[in-house]
Image 1: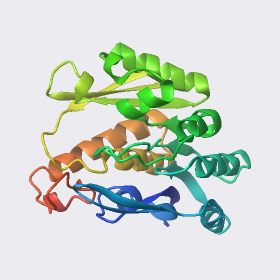
Image 2: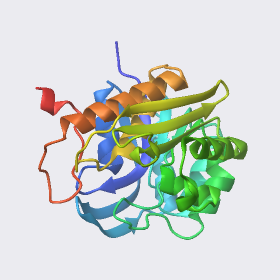
Image 3: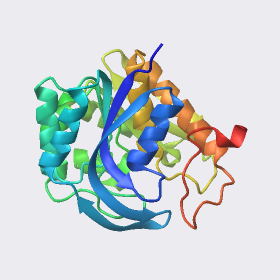
Length: 272
């Protein structure tokens, strides 16, 4: 027995709750060997993002090529790509056949409101990368930006389904639009929709009331990539990923790491 390999192409979170750090912990939680290509260095903590330094796109590509030339990478996840040229370069690598099953988490804005993508990024995602991905995992704000709709107009599960259809029309094989508790039928549930070739799946889970929810989007996408690397079908991988994140939120419910939105319990520390 030896582990399968997954690759994350994303930014670094100095606070350890999101980005590359969360991705690698998530891969480990699934028993998958994690490799990484760094796109940006951020100065951030649980209170927000203070600064961002972009990694040159040629260096990003060199990292990816170095990994895929030596490892049998079974799945790839993208997170914060930070600039349109990086989005386009990753798309070129995918088009060239160097990247396997691809999960795209289209990181545009942080939870604290810090812009994490330079001008032109929305168009680059729409035109270059989303058409090539196996799964795109936008949250509500990201979906609104990418589909050019007003966030305030999104009020129901039916609205999420329509957005998922727009992502499928762009070329994504599957679209997972995360509504969270904002669109749930009551405040105690979080609902997302998954739309793919087999049809529609509505994913509902209990809402975990906690301030420790930093990195949930990164972790969900990485968990799906880990599942795909392990050979799971997409719907099963997404269900497993949502259950993993819900358990990690529950495990970190009472943590006091930092003064803002803390990390989730990727490795099950709370159950030890």
